[in-house]
Length: 454
Image (cartoon, rainbow, N blue to C red; front, side, top):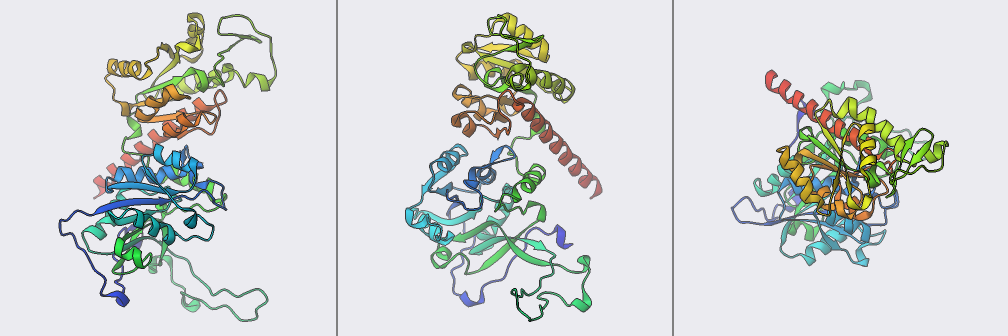
């Protein structure tokens, strides 16, 4: 098998610790916990662990993979920061509030993991997942954990194969010639003739409790090889744009397949508009929610803070893309928006979308719309911006909020827009839906090619 196609390979037993206890799959149940370390004092990127990457908090990518793998009895985030705690809980994790002693710049991962193990004596296997590995998938975790539970290893860590020629470092001002470390310069191998080297990629480390008590790695250890496309690590700002492109192509987007989305529901107030006051352009003036003429404004700055610009952009975009992909779009408003029938008709005409006013039971009325169309929640994309939208944001297969939405809505959404309300957020979410559908179709086509080839 070619090196590039390999995924899992057993490592080497530590000959210095042959007496380590090896527990093979004997049928007894062991508590397996996933643990993500997320300190608030990141030096490279402030609050890096909850910074939004491709619409999802960075830590959300690995939490989604861990929860959906269904391999863990518990999933934890260890943190010392209130905001990280809120995001962790919103993504389905329990929180280990680490002590000040292990929250210092000088504290090691081992210090924190040992504290967690000491406070949770029921945990027998810990899978330490790095928050900075957004291309981690559930199958990676499942296959690596089986090396512990079925093959009897006591320590498993992820690696990636690299084909880099390494040379000895020479300090500045030194007169010593550098030396090759892993090649013969007179006989440089071709890439296809060299297996390369295995390097830790930092995605995860799995250990038994007995191993943790002695250190991070030991006993009977093994490596789990991940393909390069899944090996993404973010440490400084310059990594961020590269990671965003990589995660859109190779990231894990959840159990529900995006190609099944059939209905997009978008809250008018706070999504198409930048606040509760709904206004439309008519000529060179504004129409308020009551239909009255407002002061004429012609500057770009003022025009961009009204519904007119977003509607004009969205109408064209929606007509030529979402509809073609079989996605029905309905604009919704609550009774608090005071959306008159005349204004609703005007909005519907401008966007080409149905406009529907909902009562206080938003979830119930959305469910009724779904029943009328014989749809499940996984077939619905929902865009909201405030507390009344939280239930629908949680239930929908895809959900989003504008950049300036309240924290309670951001934590419930699966995608956080870079754009603010009324300034391109709806278009951005539409593009995100279409990108995911394209990604899913591409994967289906690849699967078909593979089946036909082999």
